[in-house]
Image 1 (cartoon, rainbow, N blue to C red):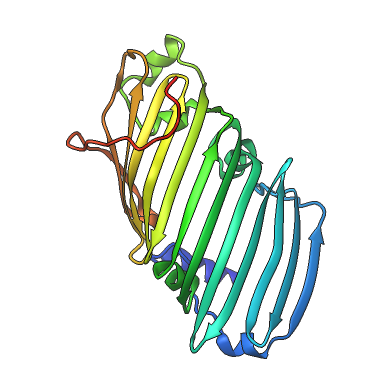
Image 2 (image 1 turned 90 degrees about the horizontal axis):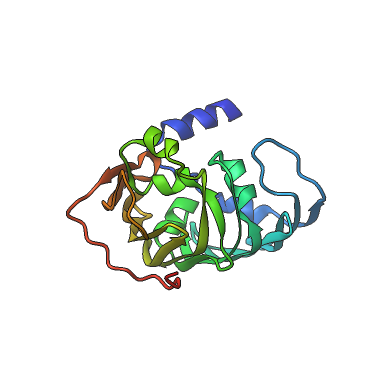
Length: 269
């Protein structure tokens, strides 16, 4: 299928996660042992500096390990294994982020600027005929932390608050960036439901807390964020923001009835 047609189909689909079935006959027919290293990756909006990977496909079993993507002085490493079971695939994957500079990720995603080092882990175990169905039936966990702090563009903080008069706030000296004291995002995946255990960002001026869940089977989000200033701030209302709807078309709206109960582990400074 031409690349343009595939892109159009993806854009037209209500699903965000890949639904293309994994071809079991092709996997069973393959016998591949490949070691690859790319010492430099050049391209617009690409956060990775280099790649190392070893791929083995034998008797239908796929193993991608080790996988290493360099990002500045840090890296994302992975160990991924897939085994065919009938018309489906059993999947076990573990991915780790170590000392990843957030500035590379923000710049590649077009979300402004920032600094700080991220660590994290993601684990997945599931069975399905496509990536979408594997996640929809999967179990695992996702944890991301910024233990040493950093800073982010203030626009990202404002996304979880109500900005009444941005021009006025800029005029009285609201900074372009806001320092992060620490960040913790901890989610558990059970039977395709990704639910928050801890979600907190502690900045120099705000405490952002939240929670909720993502149904990966239906690709529906039901989460909330609340930004509370550490000091009195003109023009900012501490109103919870509800994030809801399908993954492909999220909605952000205030929810005055919502009460968020803190589960954060950041030290209140």
